[in-house]
Length: 67
Image 1 (cartoon, one colour):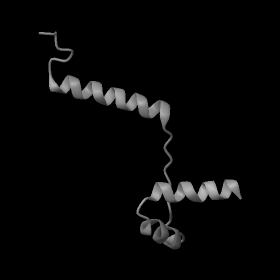
Image 2 (tube, helix red, strand yellow):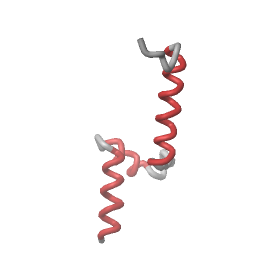
Image 3 (cartoon, helix red, strand yellow):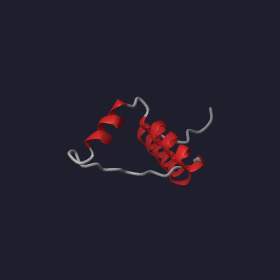
């Protein structure tokens, strides 16, 4: 029987979290946006209507880049 790499579930979860966080750090960039409830009400309403907010914002940016 092969030797177990992790002796507890906690060790396994911590290792998985560590690997996932390292992957996210090297392959993803996060942005946080804040909108004023009154001044940006139209923008908030439009974003709330979107099923996939990330894709919606991505498409708007790509449209702007491509003219």
